[in-house]
Length: 200
Image (cartoon, rainbow, N blue to C red; front, side, top):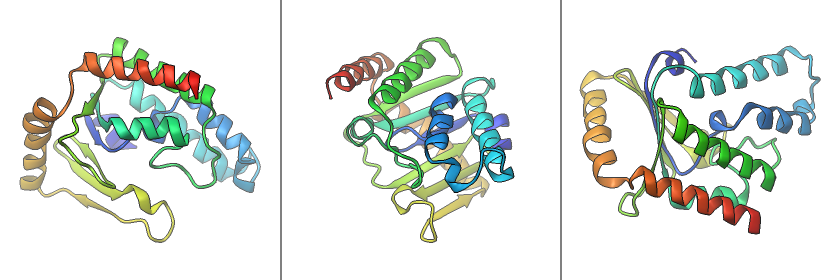
């Protein structure tokens, strides 16, 4: 949580993650899961609610840059499957209304929040299942999004300065300038997804 508050963050993955979802939707999904079999007042549930609230706040209200690099296919899958790549196994799929609300919320952030950016990766850059969360000049966290959150979850953390420096250079001087679409095209794509959302 401290890194999310204090660092600029670069996220490279297939599609949106839970901390990007508006808090009211997250809370509704928790209610619909019957509080994971516990009660609303259970200390674990209260802690989970507080963590979700803090993470959403860090993403949208803290004055640190958050840059997201997603694939078109990943965002299309979000519409089609109504799940995220880091979907919690005990949470139901999103409703069409929740997906529409989330995309509208993200579009609003892109257009009004100077600390929030979303880039679509061109088709010449392939992610597979490995995702990267880079906290500027501090930590590179990578993980396999398809392994879920059970015992087979695979992830790693790199803090070695030479690797951090090389990854920083790669993101800022290679990946964003040469392998992403202009923001205007991203906005058009997200608006197209909204239309898809109403049709499906």
